[in-house]
Image 1: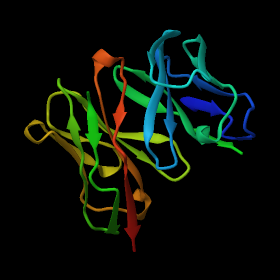
Image 2: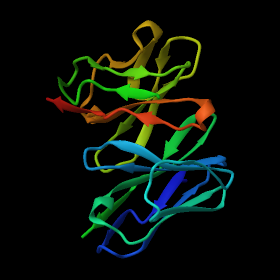
Image 3: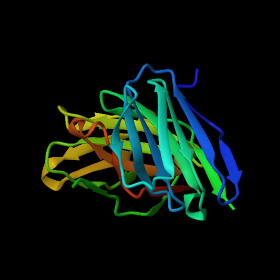
Image 4: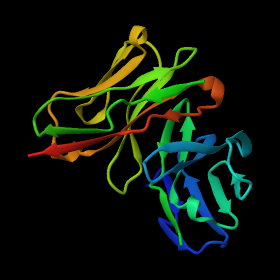
Length: 110
Length: 114
């Protein structure tokens, strides 16, 4: 069983489009995160939800909007995609400090 | 503000040789420290963590790390590397009072030669 899963694994789209990435965890964790990994492999947190409530919102453009329908799911919607949004987006979940990461979604904006 | 520095961007090591990856952190309180490994095209896998207690921690795949408060370091070691250890390694620092927010280092790429 996959602990943290993301869909899609790859996403290629044109500038200006709107897209969503979905994340699900079956670990029963209360907290979920979205991270962005840029082309230099640098990882930076974007958002965190605890029990469906937004608790971390880093300096991220308003075009990015997370949504947590329940504590097992955290989706990321991106409006008006830009070239600079190309990256790998990782979802993670945690309980008691340890974070478990999904396989990542490679987003390419052309 | 917390920060993590991995001084070595790239390390090449021969198979069977020992490996040490450096990590220095800056944090006001006692940090939670982690090492993650990322194989090409994969997600991040937790190798080991330090929360408190014994400063030498054992992880998966034969890795260990030592927390040295006086040096603000949490270096990762493996006595004998295997070709499958070629990957990107990330050190991270976090705390419970920031809802588990992790600050990652820039990563160290490890290349294993025959």
